[in-house]
Image 1 (cartoon, rainbow, N blue to C red):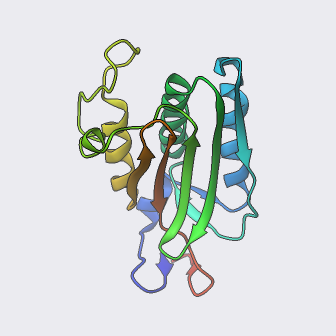
Image 2 (image 1 turned 90 degrees about the vertical axis):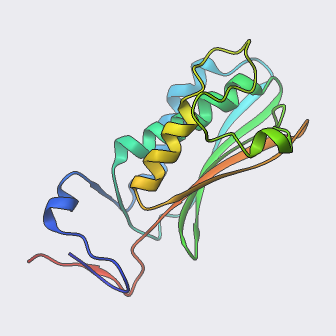
Length: 173
């Protein structure tokens, strides 16, 4: 169980999850390292390190899947500049992000970006399912997903998931 404000997970619910403390940096570093081979010339893929001063209980594989999808999309739509991967502690949880200096997304397209089969460019490889799957995963993890973008300047895809603050603790029953 988690003791705290509204957090309560049973041992069965915790069984499928990894407890992250110092591993959030490692997760992001692994994704950046494994994606380097796909980075086009003229683009820099960077991890923004952050001190691990919070604990997240989550499914590491699902977090990896969402962040990797964000990075792969950024690689498709960024031909120069940089792509940054990182996370930061927010009041509502830990926010993971991937920001790029790519082509950006128009306001009209932003409203549909997380819907199924939405493709912004029919000439770019993909099915249009990746972001809708990411949305589903993040919501199942108790989080929120979003994007900030300006056409011609780039995008910042992000999601926030709950973390354990200092008033909460993990106890065994």
